[in-house]
Every structure is written in structure tokens, then in C-alpha cells.
Image (tube, rainbow, N blue to C red; front, side, top):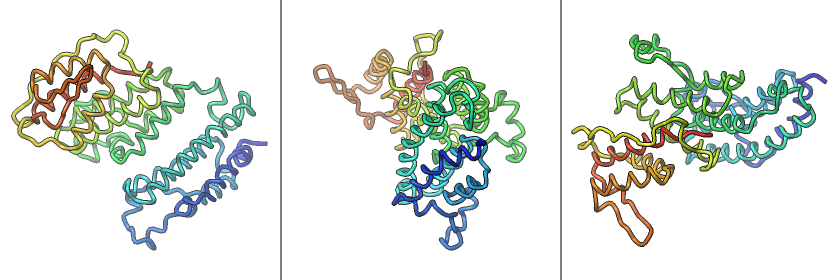
Length: 336
């Protein structure tokens, strides 16, 4: 039995189970954007995919690797979530189907690996079984790729097309999500640290080249926070610690500019700060509390052993000062 036949045999039951799911109707056939009155669909979704097309490709023996089939399956969910906002019923249906797929996929991959026992339809079966950190890293990468703000970082920056000739002079080490995905598939990462370093390089480059108020800078900051939270969820709080050899003290940030003091704080900034505070280790959390006590005593409420921080009471400049400190602390945390 060749790879294509093996993939069809193993994957058809899972595919048909999803196609028969009560939430599957919008995903079983190609999106008819003309009939649905959504002419912008092909501009936003450049690589359409549906379960019916996947079934046809399987029957034609197109898939030579099981990872190729998985990529197409995830493309169905990713397209639906990319085009439809979170509150839209199709987005919610795609999310529920994806959760069902992930659960069934884990059992399928285990079955395939046990049967292949070192060789067969999966790319990772050509060598040792896929490391646990790599499985988790792949999941995190997919989550970032499918994030609504992820599209500027999916491919390499085409500085010629964008007419930004100074980009290669300013950004010496460009990085994007497609390059990371390629490196991952080619097994170029030896551990989670190397993967995380490349991911963080994307946000660093974007924030270095683009001014703070630009949409790309803000999207990068938001995606960085999302990535950090995804890493925390994937590897657990115990799996996050300081980089080896990094100094324990985080230098105090520069005082906020007049513009930072006057500009109104957005909900996203508050949410980002809240998420990062939840990631702080006890030592850094204590330092942050001391900073807030000095800059805004009324923001701190102490009762017995508990301390409550009212972020809404922080003046814009103070909030951004605290946010810079918290961000610097979180930048030192990586997966072991």
C-alpha cells in the first residue's frame, strides 16, 4: 500500500465524521461568494479549501504525506475564522469543528505512528517520533497564523513592492511565519528556545521598523502578547522560566513622553497589560507593585495578604511606563 492509499484509509473516517457533523454544512462545499453576496471573499481568502475538495484530493491520491492532508484541513478552519468575525456563527462553527478535529486527530496520529513504527505516510515517521515540544510549538504556530492580526506576518516583507527601500538596511535579520513553518517542517529547530527566538524576532522587527502608533506596530504588539499567552497555555506555567544567563534585574524604562502622557489609553493596551501581569513571576510582580505604589498609590488596595491593582486609575503615562517594565520582564521568559 503506497502513502496516498494509506492516507485515504486512515483519514477518510475522520473526514466523513466531520462532514456529517451538524456544524459542517458551510464547509462541505466551496464557498460560493457570488451567490452569498460577499465579493471580497477571494481577496481575503487567497487559498480557499473545503471538505468536499479534500475528499476529492484524497480519492485522487494527491496527498503523499499525512501532514499535507492536515494542512488542508486546518486551512478550512483558518479561512472561515479569517473571513468571519469572532461573533459570526460561521466563525463559531469553525471553531467547534476544529476542536473536534484536534481531539480525533491526536488519536489518529497515534494509531498511524504505532502502525508505521518508524516508516510510512507521515514525514516525522522518517526519523524519531516527534518531540513533545515540537507538537506544542506547531499548535502555537497555527494559532498565531490564524489570528485576525496575523496576516501582515504570514509572508516575508516584500520591501520592493511596498516601496520601503530602507527596510533591509534597518532590519538585518528578517523573519516571518512562513519561514518559521518551513524551518519547522525541515526539522531545523533543535528545541523550543530556537523556535521562540524566531517568533519573537518577527515582533521585534515589526516594532523596530514601524513607529509605535502605526497599525503594524500595534498588531505586532498584540500578536506578541497573544503568542506569549499561547506558549503559556501550551507548555503550562511551570514550563516558562528565565533565559539562561539573563541578568535578573530589569532596567527601569525611560520616562513616558508628553505624547504618551496625553494620548488616551485604549482597551487593547489595558488588556495587554493585564495578560502580561498574569505571566509575571513573584519577584517581578513585587517590583511592579512597588513601581505602582510610587507612581500612583491610590491604584493599590491591600487587605490581609492580598493586593489588588486598579489599572483604570493609572494615568496614561504611568500605565505605559508600567507596561514597558512588565513587557521587559515577560521578554525574559521562555519555554525550557
